[in-house]
Image 1 (cartoon, rainbow, N blue to C red):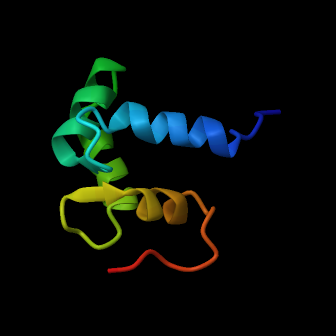
Image 2: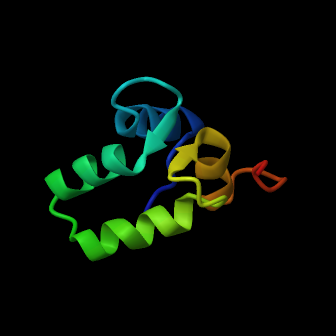
Image 3: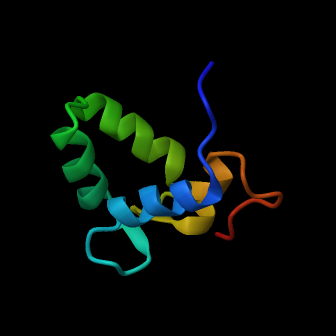
Length: 77
């Protein structure tokens, strides 16, 4: 049975994706990380579309948490 990531581990994951530390994950940052991990561009686009809830090209921490079902309220647009 897969184990759930802790809040701390999820923050580490978000911070690892946010290469420049600006508090958001850009399309380029996500692409770079996932392609290095062997993920196809089609899957990268799918992940971006699932996480970037307001479609502005950036994934905020709130969007990340909301997409993973961790926020009780939807991410602000």
